[in-house]
Image 1: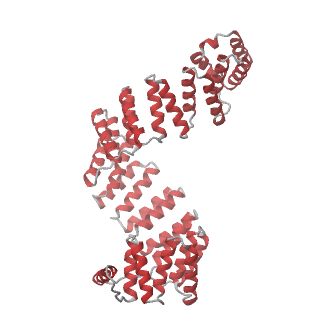
Image 2: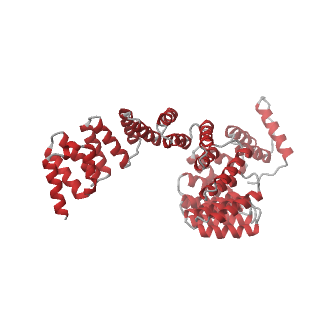
Image 3: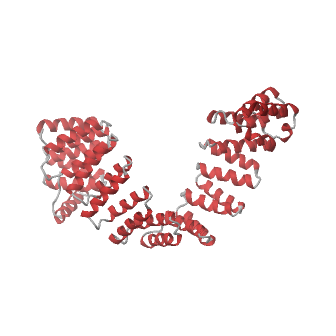
Length: 470
């Protein structure tokens, strides 16, 4: 459905309609006016007003196909698919050659995740459509249905058809590149974009996308050239400056990267990403004061950005200022207590400060939140050993073994723990497993269980294992 009344007429219709809603007077509008009013409300997300316009429109023009099609659109939005189906069947009986009916049928099928049928229905609409009217929209709809089906080559074919009709259809351009990315055809994407730019040399979007493709294939010099052309095409293109800054970082040209990030701050509201990257660059350059200033600005700008809190915590961690590191990670946890990285850092910092019980709490919380790295399990086990919680440590290690079976680091710890609890048979069993898996981890006994290592039976078992190995 195409809507192209002059703006003055459109505004007058809208003003009259909204005036009518405020009074008890019922004014007459022709069906085209109603269509434009409804289209305006749908485009602006004012669904309730669109519904009122459809209701009043159908009261005045009950046989209007377009108004009834708008009603099906609302039914689909509200997920009333059965009602939409019935209305579309009635409309199809009246106008079997109307492509808009097939488009709405395809919307219903898509909502039901029947994307194959949606494609077939849209292809019928394509056959019925007039040569130049709405063809690009249909190509885009078919492309999207193929995306839902993960048929990226088919999707790409139709998005390219959109570009043949309108080479400034940037939504289609992005989707073509999206398909190349999923197909891992980055070199093909580069060829495509270069061909596209031959006909559209000042398209900043294409230059930006070309730069991103060169980054993926790690051709950073060409990426920089592409981002420069994007900036030449539009010197207010924030995305190009950001991407150029990231590439300059990769090339260790930190001062130039900072300059590009600063341009984005001047062009638009400050972004936490740009502030964070400026901080990282200053840290690499050894400008500690400037680094930490930008980290402060980052967390002030966006307190929910975990990378900002992590950066400032790790900064103080590296400087061995553990008290400040702990202060900032506590602030981060107060904002987001379910962030697993925060809890792991919290545990590590407390461990370094010898706040053993708090460290154990941190590791446990990290595990509860799904951080199942071996290092996390083992760190908690060792802390429980230090606290004298031997049985809790054994339970922790048994859980660890479910994720990391046949791991010498686990077996040596279990051996030491069972010997400590005077469970000699279990101790020898786990020691045997440990020695079979990897004798290099014997130092675990020396570090965590020095008294156990002195036991004659343990010494003998280790000696026998060495002879067997030789």
